[in-house]
Image (cartoon, rainbow, N blue to C red; front, top):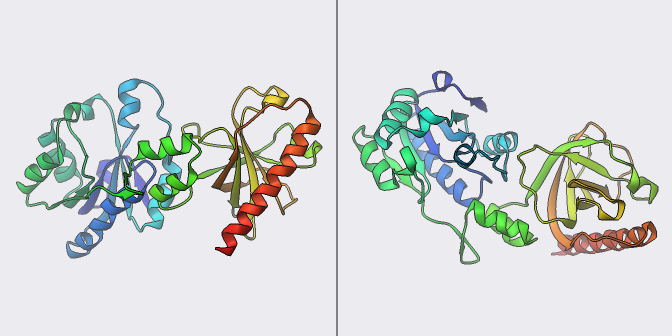
Length: 310
């Protein structure tokens, strides 16, 4: 899949799915799916147009933590068959474009859009003043059809990136998975840690994640682990937190693979969160911590066995 921040290098004509697409949840997939037939009918390149940085990060001046940082988002889009991801640099000039200017200068002149698809609550243009109805009206002047995806729900609740973040913060993995359409994952590089787990008999792979990756609730999880260096998916237990028993100061995802003993330093792995087992806690001794880790491993195996039997 082609990824570009240069509008002049984008493949045209295009069939454009427009939005931030953080999380690439089921609602986003609905927006993208509507373009497939359009793109074939009009011989247009299937394109996702997103903003970089996230508009909220631009206006607040604070980094925006993302469900799917850029590399992860690009990989998921490629799996969906997207031909190109165009990243619009969100700066003051872009923020000041009126809705008609945005459509004419970006979608028509630069991307030669033949069709457009957006979510039901999409807003665009200066101060987000443009609505989906405005987009439809402006695009119709250029004879460009606009698809407005209907709201999607999970367990009768609206699907949104913010709802997924809230579910993850509460440790509600099933709820988050229903909205995402897949487990929430953490992908990173295995780096050296303090080797405390190994001294306790539970060696861990410490993950270095993108700085803008959104992290779920602190605690212990049953997880699945995949990666190019692993011949098959592995079962594991992950602790996400500051390790209060050993006076840790920053969050570190530490993954213990239940049936794997070789080291993975320098390798990339993806951790799929399957079940929240318990909150992080401080123990009076390393022996107490070791005993709890044994219980966590037992609980993870029990959960993973029950999943395989259903």
